[in-house]
Length: 327
Image (cartoon, rainbow, N blue to C red; front, side, top):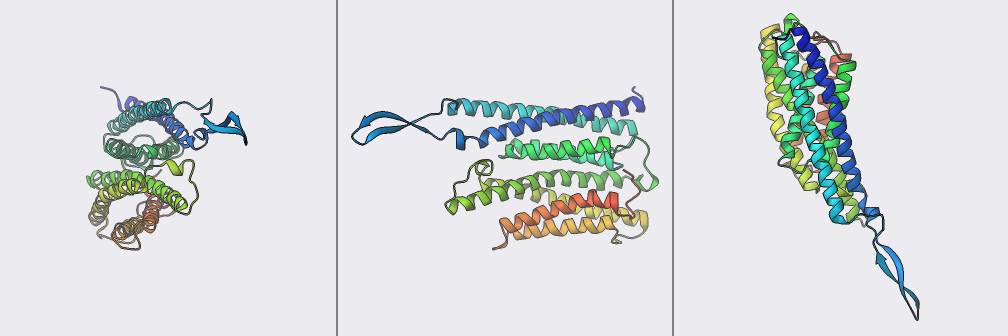
């Protein structure tokens, strides 16, 4: 049986390996996005003179010599997408193994400090993306989600790293598993929802420019339809919001068990509530005439910003009852 020290070292190596593979997957998705953004220039037909008449040369379209036929370009794009998805899956497996090894090394749930929470939350974000990838048009989200995952894991191993060890007494409760696990799952799915919402707003702006007679070229003009992106975002938020609600309620019950009160407007409690209100407003706006669409999208992004601030800003810069977990 491996010792806790060996398991902790294995966890670290697996997380580093996952970061490297995530970076490769992100580059593959970025390359795919770049290829899909080029045809506006490459596919424009050239004109060459083919005959001379009374009024001079007659010009006819000619395909650019450097442009590959559409079928070849489509096949190359699909191949790149498969490579990116395979790399993402491999990184996820390495990431999952690293989180499990960390839990075995510590002998507890592997989310007892900011380093472990970051590793678990980014794992949940990748898992949510892979689940959506099987059923929804979310390939364009890959570069953004993996960029965030790679950045957060990089900061986790360089800035937030904490050796595996026992929990502080205040966290030594089964509520750590229930409350924090729910927050991790909700945060992972919120990440997919935020990425889909951001791309939805880009695509909606491109569609508005098209409606005004301006030809939309490049990345925004080749995203999936705004309705499809909005559907992905809405699905993610509809799933994640009840999970976040449960996390807030479980936290209140844990607070009563630990501190003798359900709610005390501690900074983390306050920002958890602000996050809940913003996402509740988003879901309500989606069913309200005049607010669905762009305005609702901005509410969703504000909710995700509040979620990130609750995790980063409150933990690092604001002192409160939740400041005992360390970094």
